[in-house]
Amino acid sequence: MKTITDQYQRPIISLRITLTNLCNLNCIYCHHDGMESSKDEMSADEIYKICEIAKNIGVKKIRLSGGEPLVRKDIVEIIEKIATLDFKDISLTTNGVLLEKYSEDLKKAGLNRVNVSLDTLKPDVYQFITKKDYLEKVKKGIVKAVDAGLDPVKINMVLMKGINEDEVEEMFEFSKKYGIVLQLIELVESENCDDDKFSKEYHYSLESIEDELASRADHVKTRKFMQSRKKYYIDGGEIEVVKPMDNTDFCKNCTRLRITPDGKIKPCLLRNDNLVDLISHIRRGDNDSQLKERFLIGINNRKPYNME
Ligand code: SAM
Image (cartoon, rainbow, N blue to C red; front, side):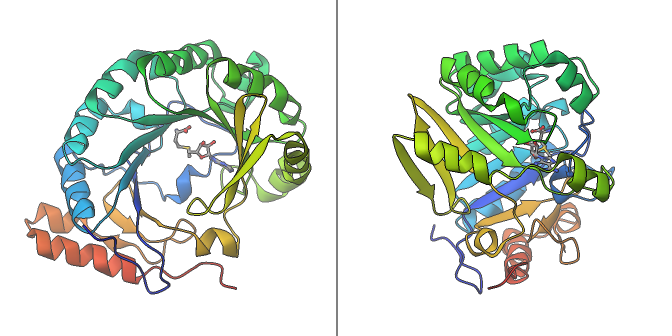
């Protein structure tokens, strides 16, 4: 199926589905993937239907996120169903707390790869960031994901001034040991913390780190459809740098549509005023071409949040 492009010639390649708002951690900085909270969740069959229509309009990749996607009791069933649609890639972003339990089943169900959020290897810092004591559990989960054959496994590390910016090297060593790609993420503002405290105390620019990585790298790759983010190959390991999303480059290269946990199409990460209802159309029995029409409205609503 040919990929559809929006009015700004951006192809719609991937669909990011937020499976739930619920999470088993309460990270100090969490932006909840730009989602407004909602109690309503989609069933596994409804998620399958959404993916089926997405596939029909040329979407190639599915990413499952949250909240925490692994708190859904039917997560394996959801992936099994989506996997029958034969996407090029099915991935999941998780905090890793339940990864030890689920890695093998997820792989068997058809999950290709996983991103695990882990900002520190120090127990006290982990407790400070997440309010929980699950560091060892998460580390075991990461190793289990590698052993289960999920590939690549990536670690998402949000850098915060005075909290973990001095841990990059240690995290890189841990990642290299297991063949994991390390993604360094620049902190962005979130309603979970008050903005003043947020930017003054914790924001840490990744520029100096990127300069250092560039000088150490054997090879650097720019990922065009991934917001031009750079990947540095150093001493047999890989580090990617994820800069803030509120810039024109991010918007220009955005190929992603999102689905909220309560089944709305979200055309832009940074906006909630142009959502398109999909779930009530599925629930009232609309046919596939009517559901495709909902997607096309969503795609038509895609306007770059930041324009040049
Ligand atoms: N619960 C899952 C997890 O922890 O990976 C999925 C949801 S979480 C919102 C998705 C990603 O967003 C995580 O990698 C997290 O580190 C990142 N994230 C959350 N808030 C952020 C912020 N304020 N700035 C940068 N990244 C953030």
